[in-house]
Image 1 (cartoon, rainbow, N blue to C red):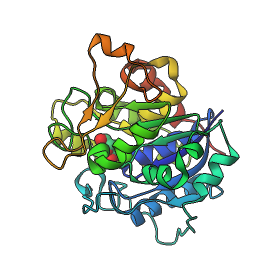
Image 2 (image 1 turned 60 degrees about the horizontal axis):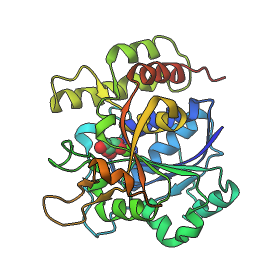
Image 3 (image 1 turned 180 degrees about the horizontal axis):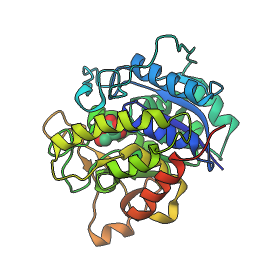
Image 4 (image 1 turned 120 degrees about the horizontal axis):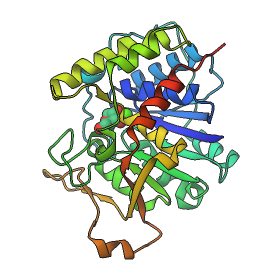
Length: 316
Ligand code: RIB
Ligand code: CA
């Protein structure tokens, strides 16, 4: 069983990742840190609260994460991709209200699950960077591994020609995590752009009311898919970046990594958020404790079939 503490900014692919994690019998979600990113922090919290309510998992604590980047820049949101409220056409009801818990719950969780906890960050990197700054490296060294959705190594970015949204949204935080984190697995656009789910896969998932999330999946996916069609009309579906990152954790044999020390450009110029690593053959020999694992390829068929399998899990 994988105990996971999820940092996210739901967001459509984050929401599908939350559903995937909650439905997956291999995963025990022990907390969700909800921050600004695709939508403002308060909206992201409301979306997490709604999904946990639907799942009957109000026992899972929601931790209020960051509202803006470390740099003090004003956060940019993406309603054209994720919808005004972050769930496409779905508006989470105001009647679902949850208390959020304080940030230091993160350290309580780390201690409770010491050396048997995975942190997955599929949002802007600010909240996790703050956890490093507040908790210190010793505290964070009790985390078994970090999985971070972000970056684009030697391939085009998605918010700028060089940078991916999570690393660009808070480049200082992203660089800090890569610098301080030990055992960091990065799932960049190099792989997540190919983690495509097609409308026919969604039709298969929603053909029956398998679980509490079934009615939501098609409307939110369709919204996201329409947005992606505009971005790239050649796509036959949409990339589920955040779902892929959790898939990578629980299906380690299906993903291939290159080990290199990675960093992120913190310059406030056109390189901001660019992911950097030395991929020359001999650089693999320079192994330091800061070496990261950068995902470079994966078994696509296994990803699709696992996604369908998990999303059609029955809940009582
Ligand atoms: O670049 C993809 C990432 O940015 C994903 O985490 C997605 O949710 C968006 O915020
Ligand atoms: Ca995200």
